[in-house]
Image (cartoon, rainbow, N blue to C red; front, top):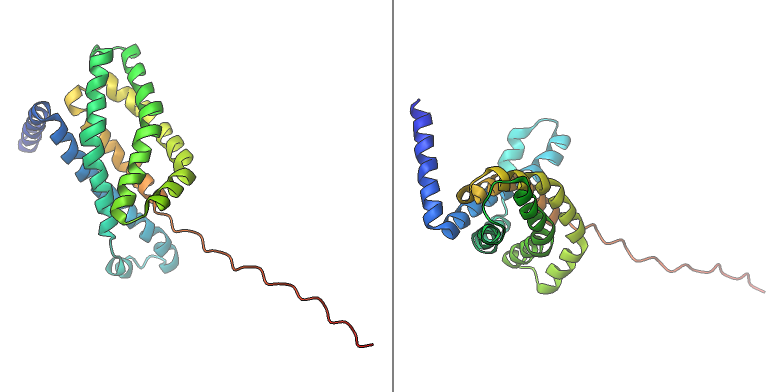
Length: 218
């Protein structure tokens, strides 16, 4: 009972804080959860191949694993800037434009704009630009990676967020929507971080010039 009471008090405090300072609450909530998502992504990237090779020698693997904290800082920065800024502003704007009535039509309209306009044309580009900049990529590298991975990232985002955004806009009150988005983003950004940090395939060696057979002496 004590744990339930404390959890309820924390939820009430978060709700009040989120209503009074919506952008600040959204920024810190998203950055904390997405930072954890990247650490999870790095763990899985190391753990899965190592487990296959070491056949269960998890102790050695965990001791040898290192976290790329600059990469994690990139995703944390993205969560702080995007979800505390543009995303929260859009969520407030949806309510001003379309109203706050919890109807199926209202939720569907917000979901369509959020998933099929906001996500592919703002969220995904911002993700690559912000995380790539923090990791030290050049603008050319960021642009090339975004072009090569934009379609896969956008389609995967739409598959996950179409049902989740509909439920979020239909059921969840405004002050807690970024919180719900952030928790679902834990899984989404774990995958997106994995996608955007895949090692480049090795460049094949240039073909060797073929030598014509020597002509027999006359």
